[in-house]
Length: 277
Image 1 (cartoon, rainbow, N blue to C red):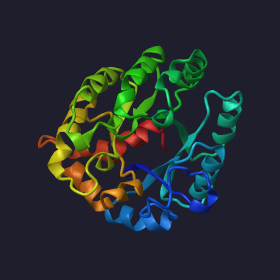
Image 2: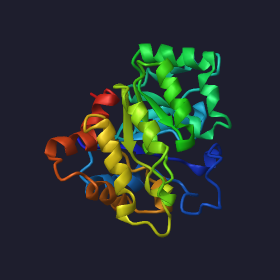
Image 3: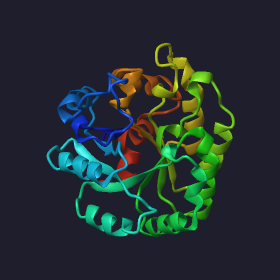
Image 4: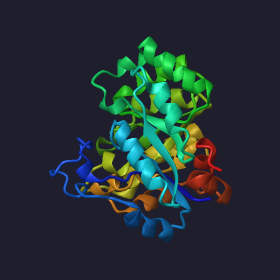
């Protein structure tokens, strides 16, 4: 099974995508399955994982309603507020939908990432770790130390770092991103998505070689068993087309990687991580 493990759909008129503004004309329109399905078919993808793009329960319900109507959507990663008093009730409601596969924590948008180390937050996450719930972690490289400490406090977490932890690819910086990610990779329940890289580079002047050092290090750290391909479509359109995103990853794979490793990267690991049937 070939899976795009990270993409988004949205309808602008819903009004809770605060980061998508008219100043981003490439993204400031509706994106729905009819737009992506031809690209999935072109690259022999059996389907995709939709990831939330707004921190609201309403948006999670919206993307679940889309998933119910389209077989190309294999799973939905929603949103929960772990500081809220009703997050467990909301989770129990969401999990009744068979396409709900987990939720994402948007650390990237937190003014102070250390708030994820608050005992209330840690206790909540431990409860989901005990239930082996898949958790996406949206984080920028400056927040990786707090994420590492969170993982230390919740060592049984089934988690995946989105967008390889958003290193400063545009500046060619590898440290301290590499050191922090290497520490995180020591926890066997943590995976990494090869996604969202092109928008961390120079949107107008990137080249394939600029991404290779990052991809090689991720593959080295997490191995072929804990990496997933994700297009981050349509956000990737800020810098590259879907075909180009695929090319970036394919051109950077080690020569020693055969069909088994590629199968795991392009679907096998996502199927296992999100417990797809």
